[in-house]
Structures are given as structure tokens and as C-alpha cells.
Image (spheres, rainbow, N blue to C red):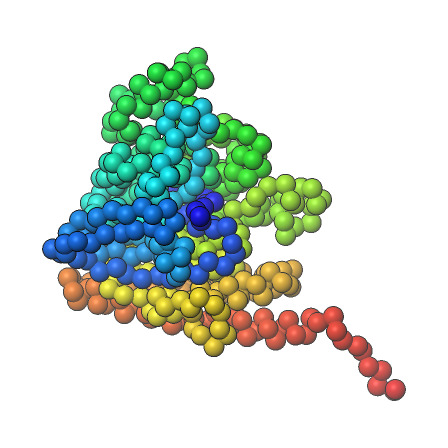
Length: 476
């Protein structure tokens, strides 16, 4: 059984962001609305022999290197049954990785390089790559070698970044893939469909690819174009599902960052690399990842005709298990650079809490998620899902209050990052890591208290909205 990641991804170069950061971001969407996850810090290891990983999904097993860097991850709680799916994190070398967005090759290419049923799938990609890489480009090359060795049982797209560069890698058949560097002044949005377009095989600074991919395409007559080498056209799909499930999400993201974008929601030629005069902020990314065609006739929570409201799959879903922005900041000391903005609830209704990734552990409300909800437990996963359910149940009544709550938290988060950076001045090594670990605990405490207050307020207001009521005439 494969728990597919039907996700939406956003990648931002350092000159396209408001503060010179690189950012990679993704919604982790699963098949079911409840697949509990936890957030933890995996310690580094050195000289550990005999380490292995294995998947309960397809029987894949492989050894791990003896040395690995510390990294954070957001795995499934029931990993013995559903697989690890560590999903995303930043390692101690300040290399970020998000894996994976499910991507689909077409039947023509898969006929000649079929998927490898017992190969390396997304449930173990982070485990086998993130602890061992020292740059974004190194991540592409390292994973490429693993795919060559083990093969892939599914199409997967993987995001990598460091302080200087952002890379997007698409694995589309059992062994073939292409990766492209996002230009520093550009951004990209992708959604479960092959996105990379023209590949320049003379430009090895900005493209990487699997061994023999050009010969493979030539041998099997797979290029449908009269000229050029368009990866999307050669390996991708362009069918009815894409036009309703995938491309509209890309179109809507572009419409937020480029309001004059002329393409239609169902266009198969939406550009992969995009530029905008608008400097992109984490809040912009949060809005897109939580969106559902807001202020258009396609909004399922809006007032359009039913046929329009149900026409396209939205970006933010109730089955988004976590949503994250992996930010690597320039202009600060190396030990302060990595920040993971983690939303572990429904992204439109829940905050993206900032965590410094130079830390040794996480608050138990994040690291010890129970399998089932208990209203007395301080679990971040269940706390934020509880709140999201309440807001959506009376959406028109509660949405403004929810937005005010999120806006205020974002103000607090920004101030928290600024103040923590200043307080950390002069700290290095273990002292800095300890300080940032404590700062993470502090912001969790604040967010937890604000969220509980919000839930209490919504419950009390919701009780007054019950339809089981009757106005008593005082004269009776």
C-alpha cells in the first residue's frame, strides 16, 4: 500500500524573496483526513555500523552510512504500519529537503523503464538522503545515485535548498529523472504533474539528469516535439485529471503572485519558472498553501454555482497532514539560518509556527503525537485539527475571528524571530543550540495557549448557534 502525497509545492530563489532567504515549501496531503504525524529532531551519529532502514509498504531495505548529520523530520506516528514518511527537514549543514510530491510519468515512457516495485520510495527518501548531504546540488546527485542503484517504485518530485540555491528534482520512471535549479530571481509552483520544461544539456550549472536519459528518449522515439527537449512533453501527462486536479492549483498560485497572469486554470502550458515584481514572503506562501480558490467562483466555501465550486481540487485540504516552509536565511550567522515554519493542522485555519532547526529536541506536544484524539492531551496535531474543524463548521461566522487569531500570531512569530536572533548574539556551538531549543519551547507555549483560548471561544459561540432552540414568550 502506498500513501500517496498528492501535494502542492512552492520554491523561491533568494533574490525573489523579501529578505534574501531561499524557501522551499509543500503541503503533505495524504489519502485520508487523519494520518497523525509528529515533529522531532533526529540526533547526529558517528561510527554506527550496521544501521539499516526498511519499508513495511514494499519490503525495501537498505544499509545506512556509519556517519550522519542531525536533522529534523515530520514522520507518521504509525510508521510500523504506514511507513516513516519523514517528509521534510533541515540538517545541521543547513541543507533543506522536502520529499515528496507525487508525480506521474506517462505510459509511453514507463513501457520502456517501468517502476521498480521494491525500489526506494518516498517513505524512506528523507531517511536515506537528508542526513548525508552538504548542499542542495549534492542532494540531487546523492538521490540520483540511489535511484540508479535501487530504482523507484513511483513518480516522485523532491525539493532541495541551501542558502544559495534551490533545486527541483522529478523522478518519473523506474530510473530516469531531471532536476533544475530555480534561478535566484524566480519562483516555481508545482502540483502532482511533471513541471520541468525545456532542458539545456549544455548548462550543467542549472540542470542535472539521470545517466543515459537522452539516449533512452532517442532509442524509443519518445520526444513528441518537432524541436527542443521538453521534459514535461516527453515524460509527463496531460489528461482530464490533470486539468481538474493539478493545473488549476498552479494557476491559482500564479494568480496570487502575478495577478495579471493570463493563462486559464486548465492550461497544460503553465510555465515552470516564473518571475514577479512582488517580493515573496513566508506569509504569501502560507496563504497559497492554505487556499481554495478564494475570491473566485471555484471556491468550495464560496457562493458560486455548485458545478464551479466542485470543479477543481483546491490546494489546502482537510487531508493536508502538515504544511511547511523551509527557510534558509542569509544575513544572519550560520547557526541561526535555518527556520522551519510548520503547520500541523488544516493550513487555512492553523498557524505556521517557526522552529529554529539548530536545536536538539522539540516540545512533547509535537514529538509525542497520540494515534487518536484526546481532548485532554496537549498534542499540537490534534489541537489544531480540533480548531480547524470548529472554524469550518461555522465558516461564515468564525472565519474573521480565525484570521485575526492567525494575523496576531504571525506578528508574535516575527517579533519572536527578531528578538531571539538578537538574544543569540555572540553565542556559538552548544550554547547557541541550547538557546534556540529553549526559544522553540517558548513559542510553542505561546501558540498552545492562544490556540486553546481560540478553541474555547469558538465552542462557546458555537453553542449559541445551535438550531435546537426556542424563543420563550415571557407572558406564557
